[in-house]
Image (tube, rainbow, N blue to C red; front, side, top):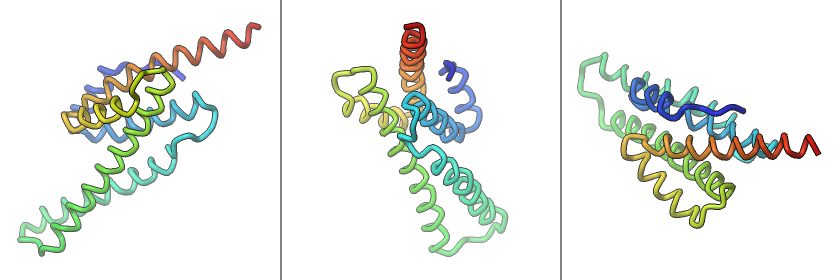
Length: 152
């Protein structure tokens, strides 16, 4: 595990129009799994969902844009449903990562932290910066605990 720059990651988030947020979430989930040395969060499953779900969503959107005709009402519903489903996955798992990190850091109100993180996600993905900083603290603690136990 290594520390990651939250601002550099946020720049990638901004440049990609928010799509890097999905990758960033998977990286955070992998960090949690590595700290715990077990699969606490389903990073592999979520990465496959995002790997196939996001391109499918974009293909459907671009297909209807390319046709330049008024799409049927079911097409709008299906596009909106896919987008909402991807966002719900993002919100649910960013909340789970936040709960884990807040509890591991001994914060007094992990549920309030998680609710705040979801609110910051809605506001331009600012939650990722906060979560990455907290994850870096946790990684440092975990690394020092591992080296401390190895030298005993």
